Image (tube, rainbow over all chains, first blue to last red; front, side, top):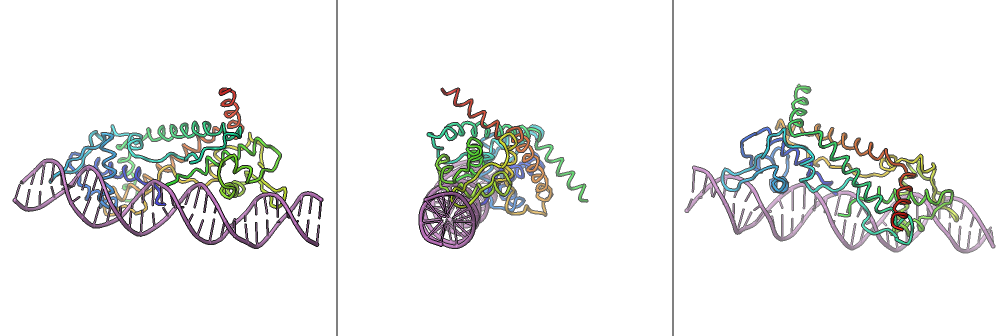
Length: 144
Length: 144
DNA sequence: CTTATTGTAACTATACTGGTTACAGTTATG
DNA sequence: CATAACTGTAACCAGTATAGTTACAATAAG
């Protein structure tokens, strides 16, 4: 399958918005940078708008902009705004409840899943959109 | 899609092996506890065998057992043995290299991906198969 | 009124996962 | 030795998620 890359695209999108500042960006412009279809972009923007990270406006001269300054946008917020899957999934079928291990393993795995998710959230909490901008700066100057 | 639950199944399988100790377990027996098809189990066992976590033997009275005692089997090892995907995927298409953001974002996302993967590995490093067994014990007694 | 843009539905192509059948190779055991 | 019992693996199917695409209604600027 095409693995879920919405979080990565969301970060890309938000970075563009951060660079452009006050200007409204069109989904078409963003799509050009991400190298995909405008509708794909708008779908992601919809999720980001639900999370109040961006604001979109329809009509001519419409488009999307950040709600908050880049320093105040944390990558955890982005992660939570986007419907990413869990790090690992629990089996679709319930384990055999007649087996002691089958009976007990599910809650253990579920707790483990939550613990890992907290770990990921914690790590993402270390990064803001502003820090992403800095890292891109660094890459550019390092390459130059 | 059916999300990848191989890691969860692997932990379940290894827990069963840990409980049974020296005995060889048949894929059929394991499948009964996990509530799936023996071939699905054998596919996962194959990956665990590649990582030297388990040993399988063909033929009558064949089956699979743990190579190491449960205390020495860490969940990171299991995670690395199983082909799980990354926490989030990078876009399939390369970003537009004519755009400064598009040019710089990819390595930033790649590094972020690695940082998160390290976070997950670190958290999984806190658990051994023995600790999983203990947690199941706890669940059982708590429920009783 | 015309033009530009978002939001969203609908459809397609692709691809991964788990489930299943089938079968060759291997080993214990009578 | 013959048989029965397993593993390993290939092949195929069904279900489903993702991204890409087209189309169009709703909305707003000029």
